[in-house]
Image 1 (spheres, rainbow, N blue to C red):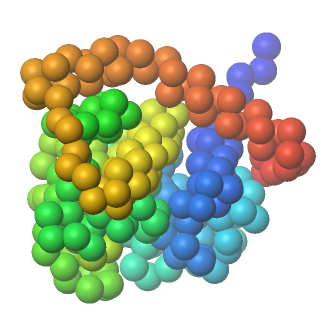
Image 2: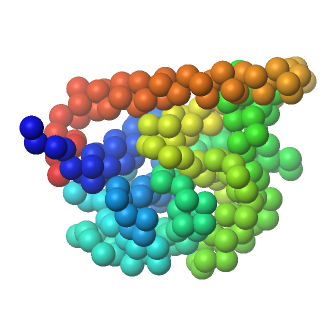
Length: 245
C-alpha cells in the first residue's frame, strides 16, 4: 500500500485553512499569514506566499522557509514581515501551527481599552479559559524580530494572543485543532460585540464552573477534527481541484 506523504498532507491542510478563512471573511486583502511546521523538521515551515489572495492559493503555491524566513523551496516570495512574528512562536513556543489574522470581531476587541475576550459569559468562549495572552503594547508593523519577541513573551503559555490595535494570533499542535480554535475565537468575539452593543451588562459564570466547562470541551477535541474534515469536504464539493499540488 502506498503511504501518503505527510508533507503533501500538510500542504493540503494549510491550503484548506487559508481558503476556508477567506470564505469566512477572516482574511484581509493579501495580508496576514498562516504557517505550519514541515512534518519531520523542527526548522522548516510552510507559509502562504506574498501577493496571492487566500482564496486562490493551491498547495503548490505554499513556500517553505527556515527560521530566519529565508525561502528554501517554492516559486513565490514571502512578505518581509511575514516571519518576524511566526518564527518566534514556532521556535520559542514550539508551536506547530501559527495562524495570524485581522478578523473583524476579534480585532474590534483589540481596539478597546481592556482588549479582552470575556471567557466567563459565553459558553463558546469558555474553551479559552486560561489559554489567552494579551500583548498590550503596540510597535507598529512587524519590521524586525523585536515585535515577534514581544508578542512571544506576551503569549506566555497561552495558545491565543490578542494584540492591541492589531489582530489575533492562534497557535496549536495540529491544523484541525488550531483552525477550530480560530473559528471559535472569532465567533466568541462576534457574540460578545453583539451583546455589548445592547448596552447591557454581561452576566458572568463563576470561574470554577467555567474551568470545568473548558476541561469538558478540551476532552471533546474530536469535534475539532470532525469540524475541519467537514469543512474540507465543502471545499471538495464547491472548489473541485483545489487540493492539487
